[in-house]
Image 1 (cartoon, rainbow, N blue to C red):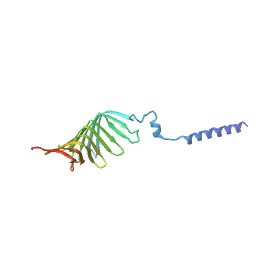
Image 2 (image 1 turned 180 degrees about the vertical axis):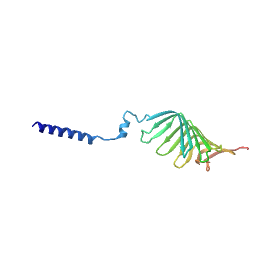
Image 3 (image 1 turned 90 degrees about the horizontal axis):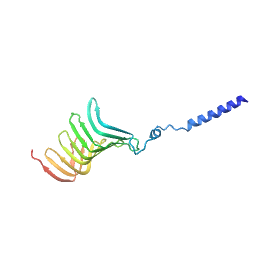
Image 4 (image 1 turned 120 degrees about the vertical axis):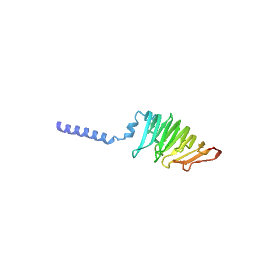
Length: 184
């Protein structure tokens, strides 16, 4: 009799443990979200000085006072609320520079949204001034539909909108509102 109860108790305990094991879900993402509000960043970093190196060459240097990482959202992004200073080097090690008061990088789309006193200076000293500028990393395309001033060696061109590839070999001011030709 004692043996039968012992096996019955063992069977019941085993059934409960097996049921518990099969009813548990191993959902790491849900566990990671515990205690985190989706409105809060997953992490914060200060005094950023990040270098992107490819094949032993520095390709870019990003400097920013603050970065907020929202990778805990469905549409993940990184925010630079206090601005960025980005130096980009081409294959010939020529430097271009981008400065903005605010930036946001959307990981899934590869889009960078630069806002507030955006200044882009190319390695040939052509300079674009805009209040907002987008960069599509996948297509290597810069664009905006906001007012811009584009200064080349020969001209200062003002307009509403701008399109260019990353090398500025086909830079174009859209809806030109004024051109001033400079003396050499």
